[in-house]
Image (cartoon, rainbow over all chains, first blue to last red; front, side, top):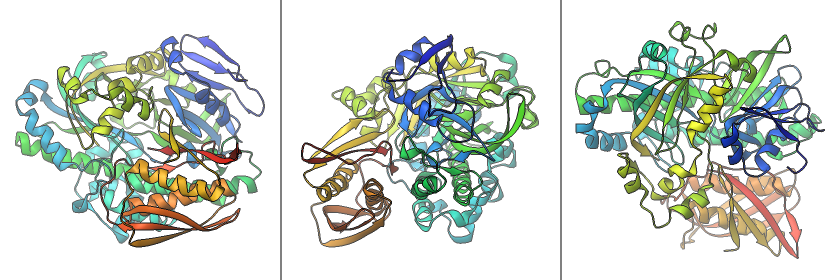
Length: 480
Length: 133
């Protein structure tokens, strides 16, 4: 494969041998089915490119939902020593803290079906979605907006949009420490301010799922999951604010990389030492954008809870609506990791990957100590999604796992294949009700545009990184 | 319009060409606007774009990023693009169009630097630009 030396080391792992200028090996989590989806060399070359960056600790990794990105592959995980390593805006991506949250309900699918049409229409009307979506009703500005950037989900709780109980159900309690609103440009503020409380477009969605299979009844019970239960998944991020923060800092780091003598195999990997001025500024801005995303998902959860109250009557608490978990997909975080017997302070980049802490990990709040951290793995519109939990084997990925199914087809190819088809009707035949702001988005996001998420889950659980708690089946969704 | 779409798994891309490097910048601007649904026949208003970069590839990304900002945030819709100045590190360009704020077809998050190179092949300047969608 174009100069790369790739070998299978077990049923769930491929290794890319270290060839200069790589500083370490590549490690790709892939069973045979996933390996067949890797296609051409570009995506594996991206894993190898990340391995060339200074201060990388352990291998350059890719989760089984890996696909061709820009700079880092989507599904990429890499840790860099705080003292000798780098931080890369391209290693986080433009949609900083794009992530997923799962809201549980106490309702069973048969409770929802009689009011499904009203519920779906109300969700579509109440949660702004689509290209350029704004939410003037929830917009804040000036110092108050800076508080959003500093506090994340905690701001939503302070303002009464979310119950305090939600905070423990967030990665890092919904607030990345070290956010610096001053490092966020005026343009980023301008792009982001009107978009707080909006879903956006593309692969972002709001989905109603039913718990289709309980794989681990003890963990499911502990997490509040049961058969035929209705749960809500929300996928969105930091909107235009995050996009602009990344833009601003990639540009700055092209010069910084050159000044610090860092050779870049791809400019999108532009980076600077973690402890440099450029590195610190980016981290402060990125954390602010990540906090915007936490607040954004909480505001969407607030709109969803309000919609359920309108449609079913009673309070959201009586409807059993509580946050199961909210996690980041695109992030760089300072974490203590263990490698070759040493404890290292590292900047762990997850680009299209999610954290996965095992049972007993002291970073977990009490509610997850016995189960491990919930790992939410949404699939495509027409197949399954999964709730996994972190397992002991996750130590080898610096406690990281897959974030979804991973794209298989380009958007262009998906639209070509959708020509002449009615995707909404195809979904309806599977008893899946969808509303979308754009037909083009539906075509781009059709089920066959994605890998089979079951292959992704088989790989990550087979490798011992996670264990399966429950499987979800989608039955209604709003697409941006 | 002299551009073709590039099949990119996560996002999308555009391959642009022109007999001149200035023309390449103009065609890239129009291609981006075409993908976003930001082209308009009206050209009563003007927006000036001025950027600095470390080289021409950097300038190309920054020129397109500025246009993306004008389209997404300011609601500018583009009829015509032109360059007044292009060196290795500075660009000054002008867009003709109108601030209509009409809805867009797709949301482009960003213009990336991924493997970007301006090459001269068979007397034409070409570049493949990946957009984050």
